[in-house]
Length: 311
Ligand SMILES: Nc1ncnc2c1ncn2[C@@H]1O[C@H](COP(=O)(O)OP(=O)(O)OP(=O)(O)O)[C@@H](O)[C@H]1O
Image (cartoon, rainbow, N blue to C red; front, side, top):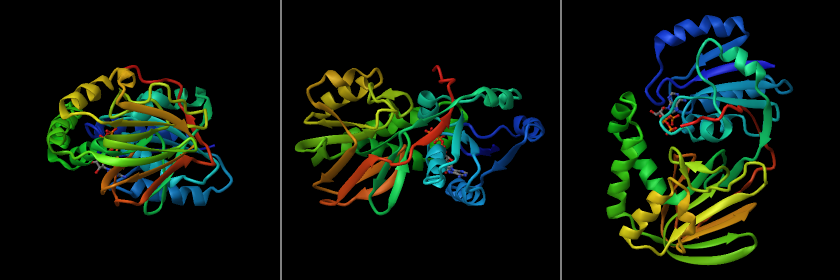
């Protein structure tokens, strides 16, 4: 199997050049090609090229970065049946590795990698302007606005360097709490249509975690062929804050204003333009009245990584 280690030097605290200089010869010796990305979209594009170069060979992409980097990587390999992913969690959130497992970046990585089993896992396909995939979750509303503001802010880079990247989300959570305007949602899931008023956010989850360890869909299972939909609606600003904070523990599901359903196909229409994220990455605005369609992808994603993060 061809093995390629891909590094996003801008994720999290940034790449430690000294560590990498030490590791590159070890990786090469173990037959692992090393590639360092420079700019957004490079990983997606380069992985697509590799998949075209090796159409019938198994290729293991060992990806160092956060959830945004994993989002790029899985989109690059979408439709390629022989791609396997392993994650070196190096971002500020790392929800991919929290659920699927991650590898520590050290000289023993090649040996650990060779012992890992890979398994097929569900993947989300969604379409707004074009068809894309998301591996952990996607959503519309308040959380997408928080992620959008946080990822664009300069303070995230500074806080990441201080290993406090998550703090930026608290800053923008408070800001959005003051300005966010809830929307009306028409949701079709599990074959039924339902309307919700004063919706703060709608999340479509493949796995339990999002936002850096928040248990938004505590019972989500990446092998059940179903998406876990969460709609948080009908709350005052103060009560919404209370419910949102309870997501860290997963206890939000006991509030009557939190609706959850499982479905292989989900259809969302909002009454106003609403911001959408996929794996925490901005996907622009879903225009009012236009449908966001998300479903379990026909093809599974193969992931190697049983050493789940224990944070
Ligand atoms: N292919 C790429 N090559 C280099 N830099 C990238 C690439 N894609 C994104 N970036 C930059 O990397 C940073 C974000 O990476 P990523 O989203 O993986 O990690 P994070 O934001 O630190 O953590 P998380 O997404 O887990 O919260 C941003 O500064 C972004 O501009």
